[in-house]
Image (cartoon, rainbow, N blue to C red; front, side, top):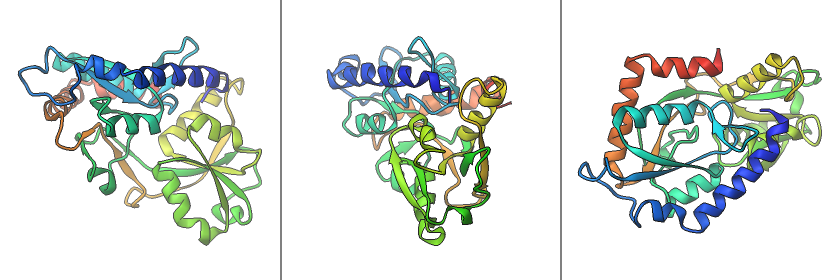
Length: 274
């Protein structure tokens, strides 16, 4: 994550949050979050997302957000011929807006978990992920054993936080919780010696630092990562409220299948991670 973009993240979050608070999503939805095939083509769906979860949501200097999630959703919308309005309000607010019916769906690097499936209907998975522990590249911390008696940084509401909490007694570390990845990163090397993060997000942060020759970001290294069969490995999915927007979910799945078949999906992902 580019540190100079932190200001853009916060200002963008405030702007989009105000849209939600003022009922912007409801106006776009004509006061309803349910739909069927007869009105899906004419409706503008309101979608909530994160505002800083690179490479899935990447804030730009002009306040816009790019990234894997943004491009995948746009490609699916074009493939299926539906309109949408994207609100990058941060992960916690995105989920809260979905639960309160202010938006139609959430795409935000959101792991499909049994607990979440009780509240939301998910699309077919669109990305496989694991979680990891990372430290600054020059840190003396080489393994989880070295975290004993130290503090780590976590992002609220994530599987990486769940993994950290499940092992913190075993490894004897304490934790501080933050709302977004950029703030969490700045804690590493300061009040915290490590952070727990989704592996593709951390891999992108490391790549970003290398690509800018150390001019932007923090130089991280991954010291541990869960295996693919771990309960803390996950698949990302697009979510809607349970029992609602079934046609939107169907269009997402059909569009995802199509963009995978025609190569668009691989082109998008590879442009950020290779």
